[in-house]
Length: 156
Image (cartoon, rainbow, N blue to C red; front, side):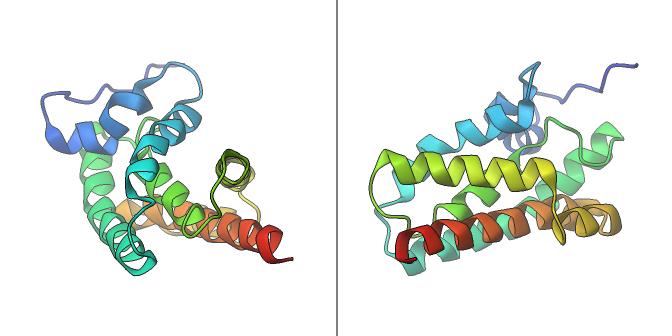
């Protein structure tokens, strides 16, 4: 098996797409990259819910370009080290979670579960939608499903 191409760490687009380098982890880069988004969440969680979700939506839109450009530069669709999409997916999952580490851990685990297992419609989208939008879309849907489960757990 050949080694995946490495990002250009001097390129800010690659640096962001690789989650400030967290996606370069030799094992489980998606999980490591998702963990690296937790400090970002902790910094954003005090925003009003409307401001938080607008910022996450902007990150999604920027991510379409970031992930698409990095993927094209590296010549690999959805390179395993590209984790900006995981960042956005986790931030979607954690929108308006109750305070407490239990909820944060539950959201993290649910997002990773949906992102790894790719139940319908996540896997279907992952196979059919390409480019930067495709890279972002399956993680957005995984984040929305995990958000739904977390919210059901909170109110159910």
